[in-house]
Image 1 (tube, rainbow, N blue to C red):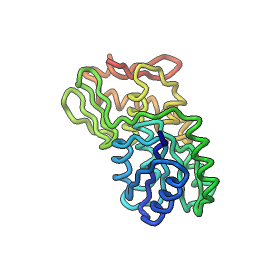
Image 2: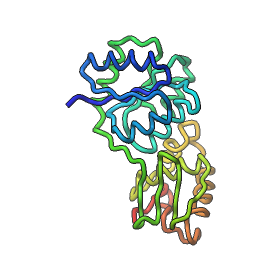
Image 3: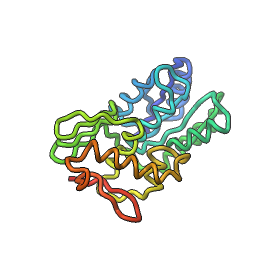
Image 4: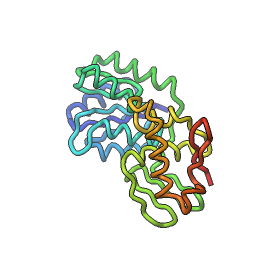
Length: 228
């Protein structure tokens, strides 16, 4: 079965050009012409890899990449006209696997896609995770959280942190790994901030923040979300 590639770009000509190239090289292709459509298509079509533009209206590719990372480990390659070193570094830090600058060399792009697919197991995309017999629900598509039937407002940094913990439920996530996946490598030394944000989360999620049932501390290592 042909691997499925999702192309997300708000420029129709670019989507059509990449889609034609990929189909000629034997890939199955699905298309999205906006960020929100890209997120929905990713969940419903479960692609093996995503090609993602940066400069899109309403929601840029940086944010799409972050949200895709919350749902899955699907390989992501930025294909963008932004070619500065700082742009490439940013793309890789927030979770992309590769970065190609437009205009693309067709053979190089296909080679990079094949290389990523060889190293990646087929991803599973989760729009929502449910714990504790439905009493804890986190929706990655809408970035919403319900605890004991009540909607809980989280800031973007709080949600990103909780998303990493929930996707790794049952496993102790070391502090540096947690910070890097939730906020990016630029925050890798922000362990003091991490402790503070765990405190904020517990105040919002736990019936008794002093005796947490969802987010537990592994002293000297990191934090674990309890898979109940």
